[in-house]
Length: 430
Ligand SMILES: Nc1nc2c(c(=O)[nH]1)N[C@H]1C(S)=C(S)[C@@H](COP(=O)(O)OP(=O)(O)OC[C@H]3O[C@@H](n4cnc5c(N)ncnc54)[C@H](O)[C@@H]3O)O[C@H]1N2
Ligand code: MOO
Image 1 (cartoon, rainbow, N blue to C red):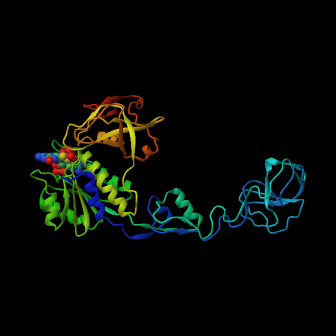
Image 2: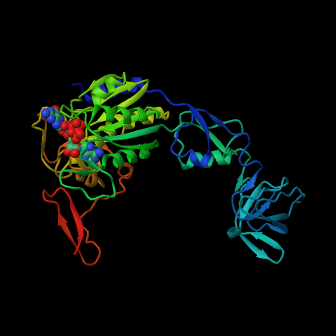
Image 3: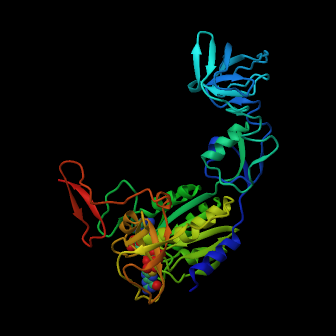
């Protein structure tokens, strides 16, 4: 059994960034660009007004009077000379006429017929944006390796780009294994359950920026598992859930071997998620995650998400961690480090974390209610008030915006009930 960190290292060593493609800028969001982007022009291109007001040749003294020659809206250029003791009415963003260098806002003049009178002193150059002041021609405005957020997309548009080179999104095939699985849209028969992992894992892929391809379910035979896995080898990654432990019908490892794959590790010293395996078949990275829904999602967070982010050119691939004050006692009597699902809140005095209900590896409710993982080593113990490191799973919480409060009243006619083990409260219509 290897450590989480060692497993992550082995994975990262095997993942290289995918090819680069030119995407329309609207499809560049949250992706990484491998190139520096240089502005072909100055912004503003010519000196322009920062205020709605009057342009004139400055400076101006309080009481100075000027004749207003006309009006310049944004988008119109005027090279007509403006003489001393003359001014041009000008709107924000309009080019300042070449014979002017100063703008006085409307608020600082008194208008008398076709003349204005300055009500205070105006320094030369006031309220004028110089050429290149915002963006300088030939300067790098976005550096290679940047993640394109809305601000970067806006900057690309500012410098006239319609497309942007970005790393390709990985195609990630998702396969669930197990005779007990029924398709979504049916009601589970005794002994059966709905295949939920395909959907949680597919959306984790999407959330990371990848493209999920659902392969459906393979039955618990080695032949069926091999057949379905072969389909997944057309993708960039294959993520499998279930069938990777030591049960009589756990065929994922034998199927990988039958397909000539190399298993790089199996079993990580962690709970949930111990029986996770990482392999390669024909150069395609294969993640075999445990079937337990929470174990599968936690293992995805730790191992698959960073790999997908690296493939998309990201330098920061691991979730951020913060120090939080724990509200309850937490003890790990197990032999494995435990990744406890928690609820972290950003309060005025910093982060505070509580435990998200029952921590069974099957309890997806702990991830519905929770938004972070608290790692506690084997035989570790935290007392209320201790500072603990928590991994934020959720972007709202990176900014401390979301408050998971399940106690609010539901719609009229509904009542709040608790799941049997009180890990989650939810609403039921009466
Ligand atoms: N004797 C041992 N038994 C088990 C061990 C062990 O070390 N020795 N490890 C346990 C741990 S830890 C885990 S985790 C599970 C993982 O087992 P598998 O990966 O082989 O998963 P399955 O047995 O196929 O399923 C486990 C559980 O998850 C449910 N499941 C499976 N697929 C889905 C799906 N697509 N959607 C929703 N739920 C799913 C499945 O019905 C089982 O209840 O093994 C322990 N056993
Ligand atoms: O490690 Mo398992 O993942 O306990 O459920």
